[in-house]
Image 1 (cartoon, rainbow, N blue to C red):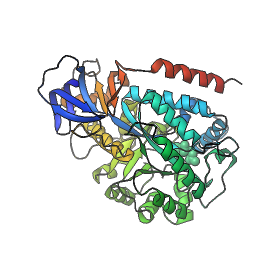
Image 2: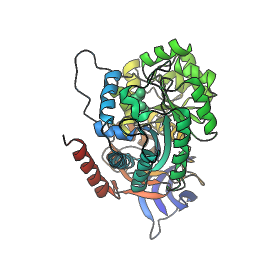
Image 3: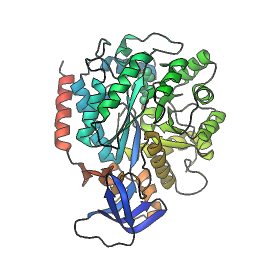
Image 4: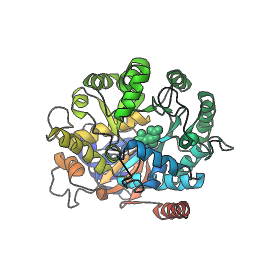
Length: 451
Ligand code: NGQ
Ligand code: ZN
């Protein structure tokens, strides 16, 4: 049982809320209820967000690619550095990094993560003896951290638009569609070791790395569950895809791939107004990753047209250069304000930006990860976060402005407790297995940086 002084329920704020959990779900909700002996007591309870896009291993190179080289540094020069870094990672290191990343996500207030997983093979490109070895390492990390995992094995067949061959730095990612089918089935079998809320989806990496006929086959392989793809992150990518397929990436997907509510288009940064409206109408989720998009120089999301059209979206930490829920929310809105020289942009109609952004990202993230979560209601997964509304950043605010306080004035340190599918993983702001996970991460980093 959880007792909250106040909680944001599906129908709005309520006082003195008592939740009964069963099998990872919310079984009952009482309002105006007194706490009872044995209840976990919290201040303010919210639906916890799912982090819909992560490449866990990239956390280990945070801060290593911020130096100016000759000429103009760009997404593409970052990517070349990332490929070099990838060459050295061992399965044990990947597991330790992923566990630390998931711990940081949980402590930031996320209950679940969509791991967009493409580091499949040995450094020379040969599969491990178990082709799903690296997937198993991600699962082992999730067992340690307890995070709700949606595993998204990635099909990455080509080095660029027009079926360009894989480059040397991309060997560890590569599969043709047949071998990918084998990997997918091995991952599906191994996923059985995780709690029942874990999900399997598929991820064609991008229209640079996957050709149209393989995309169609991939979707046929997995007739249910999430489908995630990177789309329209960089102008160069938009030009390359347009030159090859005759349409911009988002437009091409909408016209050729039956994009619907199963789909999540990661970034969708560079869209025309017509693409924004059509993506909104498809029911798919735009997977926005504001910190990474800023770090890589992708550009700000075209928010106003998309929000006005009722488009769905969620948040992802992508490169994990910094894992912070409040910073992602804040930067999403601030990037709009900086571009438009306006205020209060990311909200449909009038009202609180914080309340709109938080609720929309909670629903969109849950949809994108195939989790029955995103609101606090009976039958939903108990993906919950508690924040301390008496913290200095929040204590002056009435509850209608509390989410504005969270988005604009607070740090993740206001998070006190997090549950993922009922698993109580963060207490008093600390992950319950922080010491062990952190020690293993430090060991892995020492190994990795030894030479
Ligand atoms: C990724 N990152 O999959 O991690 C990519 C780089 C690629 C972003 N798009 C690799 N932010 O695009 O091939
Ligand atoms: Zn990504």
